Image (cartoon, rainbow, N blue to C red; front, side, top):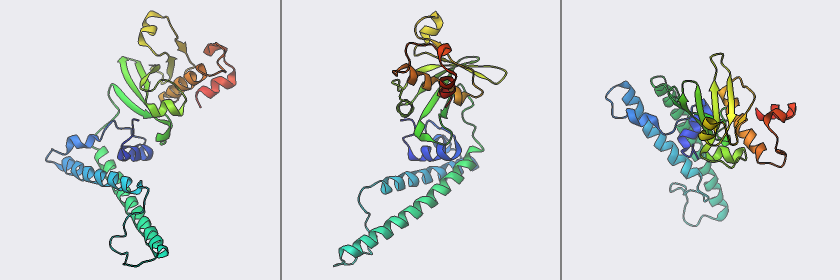
Length: 237
C-alpha cells in the first residue's frame, strides 16, 4: 500500500498531495528557516504516528495513575473512557499542528512537478489508492496502480502497469490500456484505446475501470468501441 504511513495518509486526505515518503526529512540537516521548519515537522510527524498507533490498540490505555486500588469495574470503564477521550483530543491537536507545519514547509518545496507523479484516484480519498505516472517521452506517461487501488477497482494488477496516458497540448488526455509497454511498441497484444478525458485523474480511473470490466463476465470479448454509452460513462466514474 502506497500510503501506509499515517502522516502521509493524513496529508493526502487533507491536501490531495501524495508523497512517496516524508520528503521534509531531506531538509532537516539544513541550517536555515526551512531546516528549522522541517525538524519541527519531523518531530510532529513522529508524534502523530505514535498517537495513531496508540489509538489503534485494541485495549484501553492505562489512566495515567488515576485508577485507585480497589476501583470497581464500572469506575474502570469510566476512567478508560476518559482516557480515550483525552487521547482523541490530543490526537486532533497533533493532527492540526502537523497539517499547519506541512503547509508551511510545502510553500518552500514543490512536489509532483517532475517526471514521476503520484495521485489519488479519488481526490482526498486515499481509500481508492494511488496511481503513479512516469514520463516515458515528452507527452507519454506510464501508469501503475498500487495494491490499494487494484483492490478498490477490482483489478488484478497491483504494482503493475495498467496503461499509458497521452498528454495533449490542448489539455486533454488519451488513456490507452495495456499491461506491457512492448505491446504498444509492437502494436500487438491487448491494447485498448479509451475515450479522451479532460484531466489525468479521470483518465487513470478509466484505465482501471476498463480492466475491471475486461476481467468481468460483462466484457463479452468487446473492444471499447463496442461498449454502450452508459458503459463508456462508467469508465470515468
